[in-house]
Structures are given as C-alpha cells and as structure tokens.
Length: 416
Image 1 (cartoon, rainbow, N blue to C red):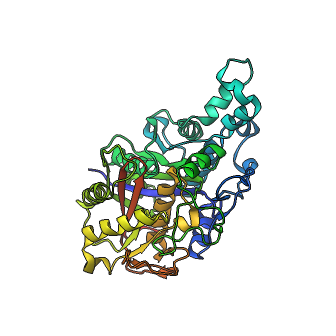
Image 2: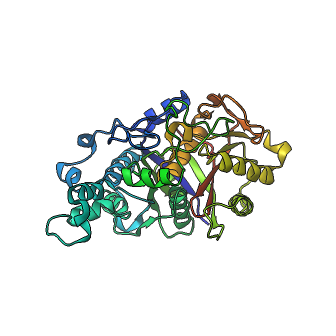
Image 3: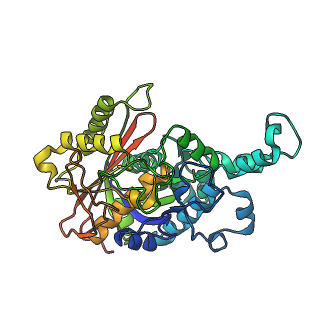
C-alpha cells in the first residue's frame, strides 16, 4: 500500500474565501451564521444561515464561466484553483490526475428562477422557459466537471453523492485510489450550496431548522445544553492529495497523511434510529482506526447542534475510547462557525484537522457555555495549543443513516 498525503487546501466558506482567512477566523472563535441575505426569507421559521459573503467571482472565473457555472461549480472551481496554487504543483499529467468531488444537492438557484418565472407552467413544455444551462447549473456532477476542466484531467472524474458525508467519502475514496496505486494525484473535496427556498422550505417543514425568533448569534452551540437545531451552511473545501514518495521527491509541503477511512450504512427506512446509529457509527470508526498506530488525541466531531445527534455521537465516542480514556481526548465541532453545508461540512472538518496538525492548534467549539451532562466530553471551548497533536479523527453522519470516519496523522520532518 502506498501512502497518501495532503499537499494543497482551497477554501470558500462562510468564515472567508481562503484557507488563511478560514483558519484565522475559526481559531478566533468567529461564526459565519447570520441573517439570510441571498433572498427574502422573512416568511420562513428562522431566516438564518451560514452564507458565503466575500466571494469575488471576477477574481477566480472568466465571464463565460460566471455565466454558465452554477454556484456550486463556481465555489468548487475557485477552491480548486487555490488548492493547486497552495500545493505549488507543476502542471500535472492529465492521465495521472483524478478528480473526485462530493456533492449532495448542488445548486438550486437556476431552478428557483425558472419556477418563479413560470409559476405553474414548468410542468408543461414552453420553448425557452428552461434550457440546458439551467439544468447543468443544478445537477450534482457539474462541480467535478468544472474542476476537471481546470486541471485538464483526462483520468478518473466522478461525483460522490451520499448526503452530508459526501465530502468525507470523496476524500476517503480519493485516498484509497492513491494508496492502491490507481492514481498519483487526486483533486478531491466537497461542495454544496443548499441555502435556497427549496431546501430550507423542506427542512423547515420537517422541523429540522431553528424556530422563529432564534438569533443568529446563539442559534448554534454543539454539545451545549442550549442547542436546538442545525443551521444550513454552504461552501467548498478542495484538496490536493498526492502519493507520498511523489510529493516528497518534489519537496512539497505536507499538511497531513490520510491514514484511515471507513463508511457504512445503518440500512433503515426511518430517518433516525438511536441504537442503530450508535452501533453503525462505532463500527465505522473502529474500521477507520484499524491500521492507525498511536492514540487519537483530537476528534473533529460531526456535532451539528442537534439535541439527539450530539448526544448519540457522545455515546459512540464513549464506546470507542471508554469513558476514562475519552476524557484525555480533545473534542470540538466547527459547525457553530460554518453551519451544516452538506458535502462541504466534511471538507471543512478535514481542512480544520489538517491545519490543526500543521499548526499544532485545535479550533474551538463555538458558543460552548453550558455543558450538557449528557455529553460528558473534553470539549475545547477556545483555541488551544496542542504541541503533541499527532492523530485526528474526523466524524461524519448523514441523513438516511450514513456514517463515515477519516483519520489524519502528522507527517514528521516535512517543511511547512
């Protein structure tokens, strides 16, 4: 088995549209959650989300791309450009460069515009009402195609669509392609732009969003006793993964090695089952940790600020580490800062974990004030120096009973 390392990171997020701004604001305990500005959300139960507000299309895209790319493709393309520049990667061999992007819902703005213009006519054929551009802006495979276009890839190009764990799964499967010798370089990550009337309406109708009157400042507080519901986010996190010997030979900066990955399904019809989730998630984490040497010292938790799910993740971690050992493991969730941006959630977690290993600082669990007695964890309430940080576990859970885990570890003696 070959080794797979992270050499480039590109971020478009509610905390900022660059890796540096994202990390600076995350460590500072800031949040990207605020009042929705992209459309009039006054009729929705809670008009709050974590929107990307500093993205400059002209800086990253041509006029043609701005016209024909959907929002998700724009974010993925820009983040991929940043990641390639960050990796200082020479123009890669098109046949040796794969693209594997996680995308669960894509972009809805083109379809919403067509619905608004057509009213009830969308179900009838009317020339010019909706065209191929609108359709291509909305489908989930478009971001991967946009990134492949940027990288001139003629290798394996695909989209992973598996709910909120799409980003983690894409990165894990990309690592496996390198570890098995199928690829030398893979551009991977997760992107989603679900902040739309359609998605928020569906989630609000299922009572999966905050209630009316919940403030943007206090809406999210993972593992905190005051937590209520998750808040939607958006963005893209794109990575350059390389085979270790290839990266080393070209003297690349290495953030971390991807040392373990596993995914699994609870295989249930119900949206959520406590016992089934706990068993499945614990099984997945154990599998991801099978070949990892050394103890996990930090868990970048899924924890979306949901009453039941945060508590369930605590039970899972207790099963994995034991209550006593668990108290020595630092835990934080970054979703209080980024919201829950579907496929981008896992990508942001991986970026934060790789940066934590590189800088030896652990990002805080935003808005953690009232510890929940049902979540007895060693939660990091503010940025923390961690000079001995060597191994990080990244947790993910998705609607439909999908569980994923990724393990990152330090690579010694590599320049930063």
